[in-house]
Length: 439
Image (cartoon, rainbow, N blue to C red; front, side, top):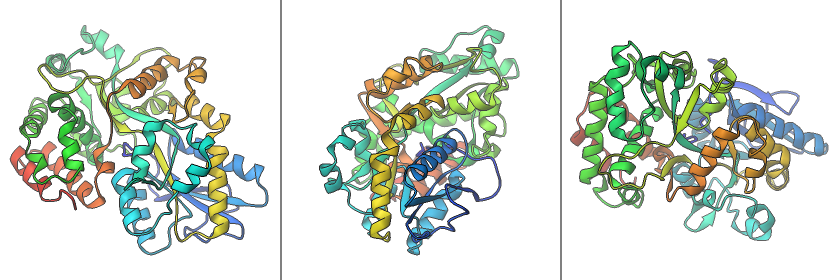
């Protein structure tokens, strides 16, 4: 999470697809109709995001007793399928949570979301509170179709300091250091990296950052622009070869392709010391804090931006992930539901309690000036790292599966899984991805 997620890619813990409803007397049952004077809202379940989203709904409903927002929450992967199916059938919610980018573009092209450009022009006080960089993924053909919300979530290299001390090694400063650490940890029976490979988007983070560090951000820019055969850049083949070398060198936990991110199994491997490092979205900090015992409170959780690659063309300040999460308004919603959504956007989602909630959960809010509250947070050290990563990055790229169209994104994730499982070689990966450029 997003998106993806990069997406947020906040995750749930149950097996049910629809886990809960909040802010109403019962589940909305989906759809744009809701009850009289009600707007419906779908989003993601699980820590750290769900409690904050619930609190925002409750806060709005309590302040506006004559109207109501009815919310339903889904696990990450289930949500992606559910929202696509519901919108296609004209039965989606009034407010559509997304990671922006290619997914939002598909909604726009299908006429499923409203153009909010004029509304933002008329409500500059709202737009001025939000990080300017977050609007890129909310914009399609020069028009704004979503409200940037929640938090900025770059990908972070997390590590367990206790494991590093146990093995007697230092955190990596370069990609070469990472390669040197792999055999050191394996020799001690510790997985160098945790990886929830069954979820696929977790694998993608490795491709995103390695391509940026080795070849620069321009390569994916050409893919995003729809340039024919853009994946054929030599830097891509080099990056893909590096990925498979990592797999062959046992860089990842044994059986990583069966480890799930939705269950937080990858997180547990890090905080229990079974893995030394993990490349994951910044939202992982909130999960580690909630579920990882004293790994956060004791200062045992380390974090950094992904290190530079020796001889690489990419700027080491660059990051990738989710420059925000996004709420759109369905074109199927009634005028009353639209008014509720816009009031929610302009009040509750930018108020001090919203900022406080995301900071308390270990996230950097999308609201400008939130660094003032960050300074007094018990998580200030981590949040400052994320704030600086996000604000100082020359390029804050959106996660590939959210930047691309749903069709291209599914092909991407499928072929990434095959790449990590050594079922295809780098050239086959390139050929498959070139085939869906612009689709």
